[in-house]
Amino acid sequence: MNKDSRIYIAGHRGLVGSAIMKDLQQKGYVNLITRSFEELDLTDQSKVAAFFGREKPEFVFLAAAKVGGIMANNVYRAQFIYENLQIQNNIIHQSYLNGVKKLLFLGSSCVYPKNAPQPMTEDCLLTGELEYTNEPYAIAKIAGMKMCESYNLQYGTDFISVMPTNLYGYNDNFNLETSHVLPALLRKIHLGKCLEKSDLPEIRRDLIKNNVEGISHDAGEQTLLDYLGRFGISEITQNGSRNVRLSLWGTGNPLREFLWVEDMADACVFVMENYSFPDVRVGRGSNVNAEIRNTHINIGSGKEITIRDLAFLVKEVVGFNGEIRFDADKPDGTPRKLLDVSKLNGLGWQAKTALKDGIAAVYHHYVSV
Image (cartoon, rainbow, N blue to C red; front, top):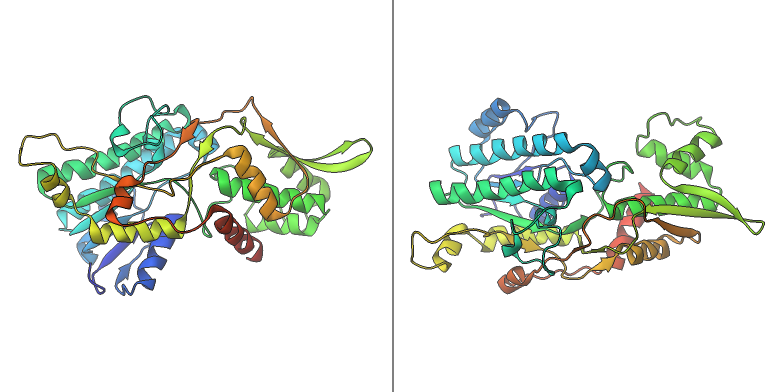
């Protein structure tokens, strides 16, 4: 990519897309193309076709997607598979038709089997059963990866896929019904701290800021407490003293890997600048009939932590003194999800931001806006 190349960032308002746009701007790229959902519905085939025909981007970062945590993935199964397939199909196909030089598709580590050997290498793809709760989303992402791979093989395109681990950052989704584990933990523990301090104005401000239905500036104490109770945040009395308890889903035993989204964005731009499908094909040998698959690249920190330890790390950062309990009757999700990032490390890239430092930065930003 040249600094003045026409670069389209699909999903530039989201956690991933906004970080990629920021990284590109910091590196001197000046011709960035963006469209909000209001300006362009990426599930609409004709509108996407018209957009590509007008704008003619040379490079594409496909970061647009319908995303969510374990609850959202399990409840909105049809929406997750339909909307993601539509977005991917439209952008990838129009990139081919309009001669895009290179496209980067953002997948997800949930594409790997539930019981894949750990850490998960790129070759684990399609070797076992997926985790049930996010199966529709994972299948959509696998389809996008295979679409890129197939277009490369049939049409000679340069469409590459990356598989980020669990991401977190400033522009995250903090909606308790749809968010991923880390932002959900951070917000729940923040609300628990506010309840601990009897800071009802801050609880009210938080709920209004996050557009909670039915919560206004004159919402009463019981209304606020009822909302918190829906998400396992409650006051309890033990031995005559008042305390606050948080109830979290699952046993707390699953292991997860987390990556600061700005590190991920740096990795995406690095891959776009240093990795191409033709190079992969040459590296697979001279046999034109050889099977070529799993050409994607994992992006992660290479480090993992239990959900229980993560909760207590967030508790420490936030300064919450209450009790945290785990509800083992609720699903855990995949027991372990650690990516093997040796392929990316071999290209010359490694993560830089420590988890505690990243969480502290996100929390400071969250309470300041």
